[in-house]
Length: 336
Image 1 (cartoon, rainbow, N blue to C red):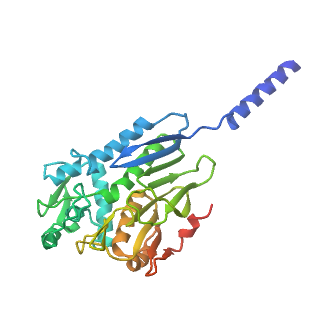
Image 2: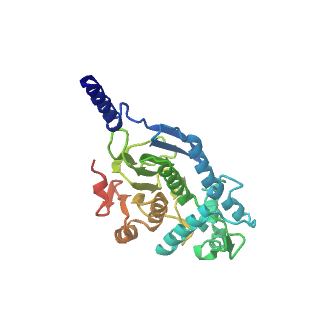
Image 3: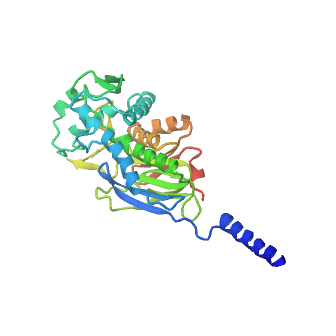
């Protein structure tokens, strides 16, 4: 009888340790690939240890099929060709957020900017031979008020209007993958598409995810990476927009890829990069672009007035030195 009790005791003890102290910590899975003309990286801890890469690619393909300028059959590409197309839920959500940011920034963020992007040589065609006399006619095709989403379709005031969701699609893609991982029971994950990041839970060391923010060093190759700041994020998204990777010089003047939809011109202020921490990566992505258009002074005041948004702006002064400004709550994300 005593022997049976001892055996039962050790059996229950073994079950206790198996349940409350698993013998092996669940591994983190790393997936990488290419989408939207850039690269993505996803790190996650799936409860069953399952590799979800194929399903992740399916989620990304949905975003690509809706919003990618690199996909000739995407919804946005078909809209640009004036085909009769009913938009999907992904497009609707993108449009709503884009319209909200456009309204709050009085058009500094604008998905109808596509004709200007092409005009200045930053679209699929990269010619820098700009006919400045044609700018006024191009500007008439730009303005978020010139399009309307109604009954599942985009209506344009001019058929020559074209859309470009590049400044919001990567962040949205990160959100879509993050939501999928959450639905699969993942509590710890990091999703990054072209530098736009969503973090949830903890990293493999049991700490908040460490996200590096690059110094805005002029480098069209993308090979120079020096860290300006390291963020420690949990349950947040972050995006950075800048004028230090995509630009060209012509007759001694720098032309950056950030175009002001209101003027039709590449921005000429001294703001080099804008980093935005937000609840969603789509918001962070859109606001980072908007701030780059607005410039340092307007961006500073607007960022301070926005709820659940924290920002870091890096400018360069006349001596070539960096000047960093942050919203009041930004530095809490720089502490481990």
